[in-house]
Amino acid sequence: QVQLVESGGGLVQAGGSLRLSCAASGRTLSTYVMAWFRQAPGKDREFVAAIKWSGGATHYSDSVKGRFTISRDNANNTVTLQMNSLKPEDTAIYYCAAEPSVVLRTTTWAYEFWGQGTQVTVSS
Figure 1 (tube, helix red, strand yellow):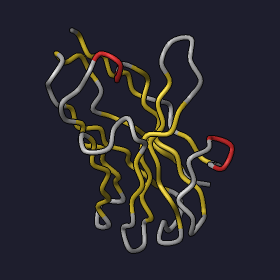
Figure 2 (tube, rainbow, N blue to C red; figure 1 turned 135 degrees about the vertical axis):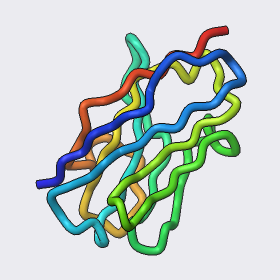
Figure 3 (cartoon, rainbow, N blue to C red; figure 1 turned 90 degrees about the vertical axis):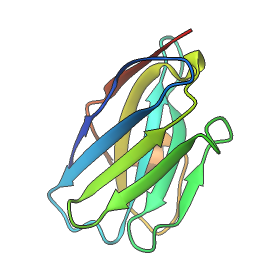
């Protein structure tokens, strides 16, 4: 079992930045893929970014590429999502997810463990 706890959400103006963190516990994560998804009101949960814990390979959705950066801190078992140049359409609940895998997947069903989510609101 992997426990995931997100933090760092909040309200920011368009063009601003936020940094989300996901603290993971319960398992050794060296064989895991960690990811961020988001869900806006009335919409399906969508993939944002993913990272392989071992090696650090990353993958981003086209909508955030060049603005968001996913990274991991091995010492603290934490995954972060640095979000720059935020837009109102980035407003959503952001979820951290984890799965034991060597493949960077973008579908929700592929991920076994989920955090409770953190709200990000970008005002225009």
